[in-house]
Length: 167
Image (cartoon, rainbow, N blue to C red; front, side, top):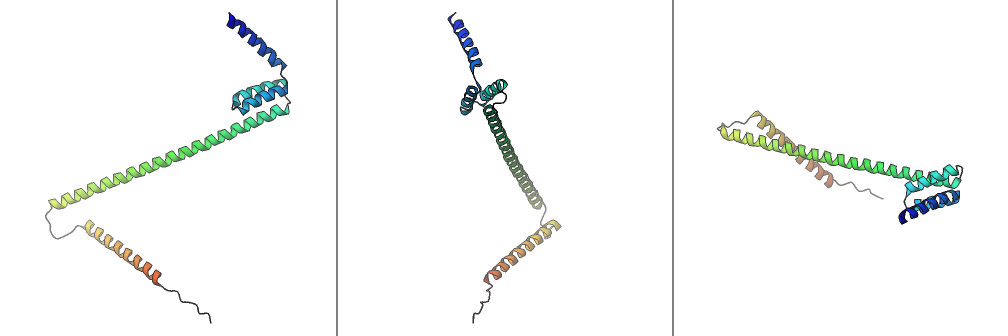
């Protein structure tokens, strides 16, 4: 019974308080809500105030400020979300690349094992297969290129530039 009386008094007080507020009071109340981080409550109070005082510049300015801040927060959230998606995509690509490398390595190991097994099964005839010969030639060609590259590097390093004579 006591709580019902208290509730009725509270409702009457709030009802009379709502009608006694002027635009300045509403602005200050909404501003305090905004400062304390309650943007939603501030927007509700501002909307109520603008219904009563539609041309109040302070209420309009505060509403625009809250709106701008929400747009900035939304934009930042979108950027963060895009950044997170990019990171996840990059991680996924790295995982896929690693899986492909692992598969290639496993296939190469299996091929090497198969070749080794087939070489052991066949008696040595003193001849090599065409593929082995091509591989050897390619390896020798690559070694030759590496040696020539190193020599060119050394020549360039040892090449002295003629000193200019200042006479």
